[in-house]
Length: 528
Image (tube, rainbow, N blue to C red):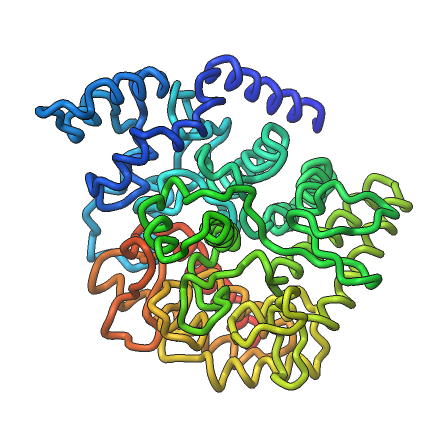
């Protein structure tokens, strides 16, 4: 069965290679004068709009035409773009909410509206075509996104949409096999980075009903692991390279990373503006890399990554060992050990268990701050924990890395400082960034609630779920929409902040709402 699936992946990859020979070079488009001029012109309010349009000709031909006429007195940039690019993207959601339906009935109807694929290959498009059905987040995000998809998948499983959930996992397996890793999203401008590695959790989720799936996806898990470990082999002495950060003779932990040193194509104007105050090319390139790396973290953007309090331009994500990333890799190592045991390879299983054990020890040594009584990121360039308390501290509870004593301390901080009327706030800073206060996000509510339940804090977890769902329901009643993020501090306001407007749809919010509803029902049954 595995060889058949692998063959399907390979065939689809070959079709893409044959039909999109021009698209292989498409990254160069983002260095053309045409691209830069359009992005800086203000022609589109959202920088992502232009990179998602499809050129009618090869970009080099368009560039040549553009350079030949752009200085003419009667040249109209808007007209040139309109004549040479078309919007072949999947249409954003257009629907009228039936207000007689409950929020949960609305979510059940939304799955079809958010489902896409299998994709047709579109020449010159930035879209990476996928062979199976999948669910998009919604709003401006009309392609699949990596870490969003785990929380969406949990909602699909709660809604008994098992086949759609599995097809999403198959798509990610295809990306690993064809590209070598899972990009941030299925656009070619995202191929310089990944996102928080939730593929292992997706495999773990679908395997709850079919344990053989852990073994089936083991090759893809191993390949993704090698991406995160930079090809590090047994016995190698780690060196600072991409995602891998050595910690003396103690071993290594990981960081987020992006290979690029230019402004992000989908946020070109914004990144260029932020770097404009810097005088040296090297400084600008370092900032671009750290902005890209923050995007790889999924927390784009947050004071969590600032080097200087209150200064967005001091973002230094690449210098930080994040709590969440290393907990996710710990889970991946454990799951691969499980898969190896299922394959009868006890030696390989032991190797992965040893890696997981070593990582757990380093998480406890470097990411637990005993003075704070909290898990904190670690800035390895400064050899100290960062000063920013964030909800990432719940990941060691989610993966049961924390001791009971540590969990109790984290719980106390969460309840005292992070719990608001609408749920858990992301950080304690009001920076204007979307991954800061006053915003709460569905995936972090999920991590927080499940982490508390792992250590027996049932009442606290139930309280958070009820606050979050009450806020979801209130906003749904007032707007008819499920939102990307919510203001959990002032329930009379919607969320805000960040480089784009609040989006609706919305995949992971739908998934977590259904998941929480199911958990609450299970807990209620246990009581009865």
